[in-house]
Image (tube, one colour):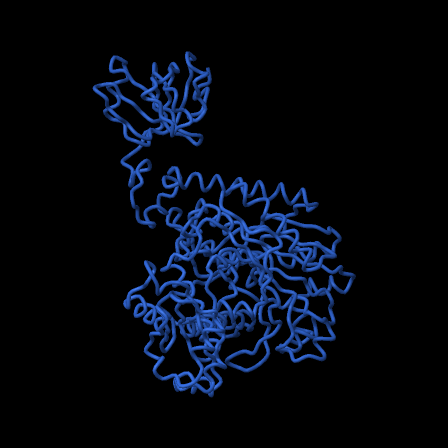
Length: 632
């Protein structure tokens, strides 16, 4: 018999009754039934009930056992009586009558219970993450993530893609988020960067002729944490294709998502092709480029209705170049769905906290309109609003008026809050959409100069002709995002593979050819030697797992995540390192309490003293000895 186990704790069935077996695992729970002890033994695969008779020699040792002790039991499989069958367990028809026991790993007092669903502070969970991972729900999420990666790989191979690995140590990029830098020991004063994404390398693979690439790629970005973003590192399904149009990329990803997601969820998934929503339309309707299409609410532009209205607050806003937008909510002013006055006051307060000066509303109920602003309207505003919004009895319109960017921003938050408060969002479905036609350029708010709006390496729609003839702010890019339930899974683009076009676009944003050659020489030199048209995308594995697990934040689907302050509480990272290591790397730490300028001045002063001392020593060595009595 095997030293530790013949079966796992999730394996035994009624067909095994009568066998002598051995199982090992953690003590999940202990129950004393009149002297007979019942133990639920747990391992990666499941739980098995173990019965210990008080006549056994090892029975007295139970007094010093704690839950989470690792134990090995040898015994006989017996069938449970019908009234004691546990249908919640796969092994619920049997139990193991223990004949022998060996303690494999004793435990001290655990900081929190694994078997009980108690509320534990996240900081404590992350400090003892290995213990937290024993909890059934979290354990299943991490296993699901592993299976998701397996299915993604299988699907990509079936679609004709080949997996390649790209470097982890690379050069820093001036674009995108902050890099994690790695000092070089053999090249003092120079630094590697951990890749924010394998972007340039996967494009170079296309230039090298590999045609269809994918990788489950680790990426590193020094960004602040969010519910859907882990600080530090994340994984993405990195994809690149040669000779691909935007629609080719869409078809690949739609094929993948509509096949993979149903393997892990029973939720409804909208059919392909997914809706294509232009970026500017998305901002105007939803106030976001990450719309949650489960929410039926959107903004309606009613600016013209209020251009000559008697409600001067709106009229003056329109005259000053602002807009007025309305959000229609159906049926909340009639019957059992009727909302109290407090609801409207709270929504106005929410809008103000989100940046609005205020928010108005009109209620249609029982054939009448109610609102603090209706009395100021002098024209045909009400019938025009009814026609524009398709108003029915019981509907409400909420209004926001200000400059367009602010209205869109606040309106997006109000839409989300209304959907949450009124339970308008169907939690049993996934709704995907593409956001397309991102602007290629925008104006820097501080300097007024032209800058890239999103990705400088995207192909502009219309190519060089558009660059030479159109207003730069009107040029769109072959840039796209895939969004699900208000979460951006990935950005992607058809790449600009034409060197002269790339030089011209960077020139418009103030970069000389020399700067482009210096910063992106590897890629642009490759393009000069024959590059195929290519494009790609990289949906986040962590975010897909978070959606499929219905997890509240991304840390719940990462085995060993950082906390929101980018700290690993279990491994105590980041942490100081030995001065010997810093000297080898020629790195001098700057104390947090000192200003950089003061530190550098002190370092320069010390360096100057060292140089002066070295120069004086050199002069003394080179000077001839004086032929004097003293010299002798």
